Length: 185
Length: 185
Image (cartoon, rainbow over all chains, first blue to last red; front, side, top):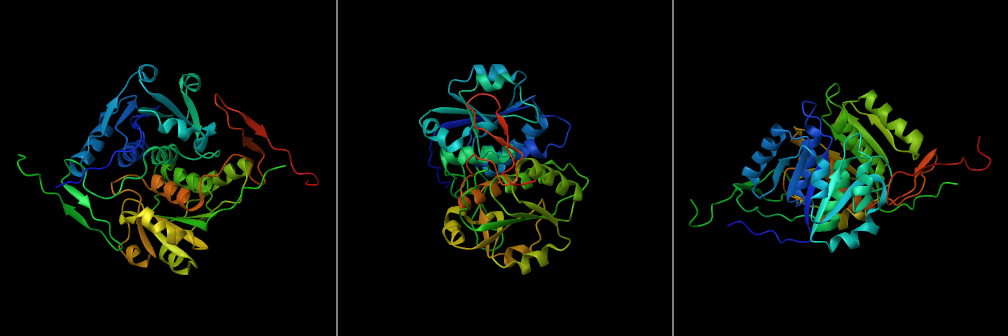
């Protein structure tokens, strides 16, 4: 029977702006997998890319959870309609450790990550522009550290609906099938 | 005059195994930039890729620091010759929070990150196999969280030798030229 993950911190959604469908999908895939693994709820992709959505959904079918990938044609509308705090991750922003205490008290946080070119309007639309370090690095790293700061790093244990779980191991790989809960189909 | 970054935690080197020169270089570039931004000392790339080395060195010429990228043809020799703890980042390993206290006491840590296929020998050659979460995600995210756990996240301030520094800003971008220290050429 899968253990429940203890929920901690705000619900976090992620919006990826400026994805380029048809180019190497690995970077956006890494971003979405990082969002999922560290407890985000949803991943908006602008522009939409059904191939990436399908790839991430396949991960969820095996490893559980309710993480969802959705396309959005208009990123600005997604930002404006968001009911919680909007955090734009940028190396130009205020330090993460200064922003975290306020953000941890919010119920919902939208983390916005850009590609190479970020629309200038985003800086003023965001509730906060937050830097994880003040050097050029990676939106994958920045998102990971924001999520870990807001929600911690999830411990081991099967996620709801998983058919497999990893049993932490000091050497090698140990993947265990997860039994369906009694009474399920 | 550039402020000195306070050094914290062990010196960390990173070894990237299974890079594929000629494919999209963004993922390995993100990995190297993440290593640099979060305070690693050196990045070994297997197999070597001079284009990526040059790209990262260009970042260092502008933003400072002594981070170095080096190629290695034989990853196993690099691992065996390493004088400190060897940490293989893998979703199958023991939880990061269990491994961190021991690792923080080491003087030198080599973080090893694989590509799609990791040589099985690595699991037994490593001092520790460490998982950052127990779900599929990203070696960039895993490296970021290991480095932040070992060394913290560097605060603002120019790095030694930088010609530019970012001044943290709540809105927009503020990049300041860094004056050479008095007496320098």
